[in-house]
Image (cartoon, rainbow, N blue to C red; front, side, top):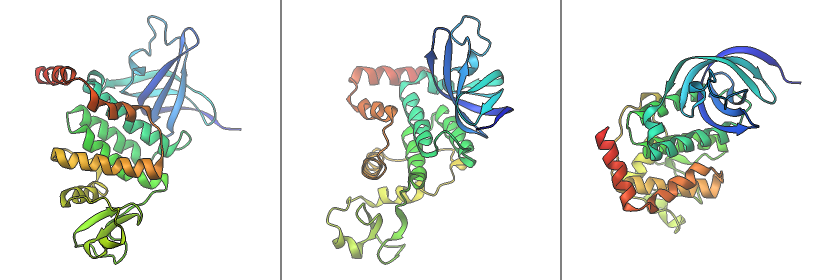
Length: 266
């Protein structure tokens, strides 16, 4: 049998869904217990005292009962703060949902994330400040790969360990190939120097120190293509928000212009 304990903990609301006629199930990323599903009785009733604290992309300090198995419960919340820009921007919302969904897939629901709680909190904070959500997503994707059992060698050539040559990425060899060994994989990705630089840099950057990022659009496209291939071929997770992000390129021009105008007003 699992244990039950009262606790005060920090958390980020990931999502919620209606349950029965008056209640809700709320998934929260917590600082000490990882991803937990909470049953909130009466959450759909007018005047629920926890209404503001259980909105998606809200951070708060919660007091409640944590169960190792099954649903947990919340009795009170304080220091409630919402990531307002993420909530109001459909694109930032999608990237943030994908990041949290990816972390949930990587860590599951049963364990503390350790330093990754602070990293994910920081990522949401800088997305909420307008830092490039796509590149921040790439950072998380790269640094979570090992939790899915995928560890591409981005340090040097997988054949000769050269760390200073011109490189390309090879899925077949599981990492970088230096120019002297490109002939070994005719299906290598043929990435340019700048994309390789950012793959290596973003895979090791200290997430908690990220304050600003400036990456050219062409490099962003190449990073997205590379990580999509790695995740599709070697990880295989299926996260709804990622499909939404992929479909954003097909949005009508009018929607994109309206969104840019709204951001300018802000």
